Each structure stands twice: as structure tokens, then as C-alpha cells.
Length: 95
Image 1 (cartoon, rainbow, N blue to C red):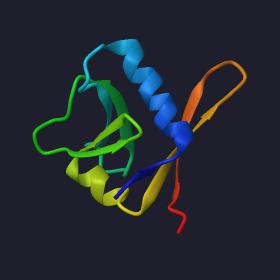
Image 2: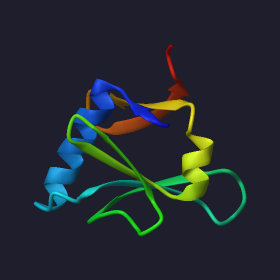
Image 3: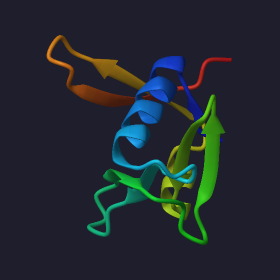
Image 4: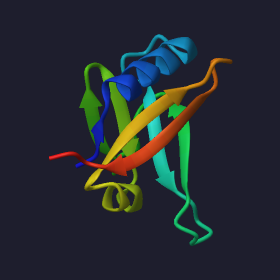
């Protein structure tokens, strides 16, 4: 199952709280329909019925089936640059 670093969890909590006050708000990672293996991140009010939910330190990630398979052995990290822009990084899970 996908894991989150402390930084990624903090960024996701911050993003979710800026958009809505709902406890179900989180980041959804879904596969692109174009078949390139690209993933789309979006802030949503809650998971879709068939999403897998990953929750770490109050940060919620919703994964569609394809994204869940692609990210099963991965970790999600976040990097914040000097201007405050966020980049998410997918890395191998550390043992």
C-alpha cells in the first residue's frame, strides 16, 4: 500500500484544509485515460465508491484501482520550493 512521508502528509492536510472544511476532503490520485501511465492529482470532497483510501497522520489519499496498483509499493513525498510551490515525488518505499 502507498505510504506518505511526514512532509507529504503535512502538505496534503494543508491543501485539504484550504479547500474545504469537510473531514472527508483529501487528495485523489487517478490514472489518465490516455494509457501513458500518467497520474492526476486533485483535491476532492471524498473518495469515489471504489477508491482505496490511505490515511496517514490525518492526511487522506484516495486511489483509483489503477493508481492503487501502480503505487502499491511506493511512497509519496512532497517538496516545497522557496516560492511555496509544491511538487509531489513518488519514490520506492524504504524497508
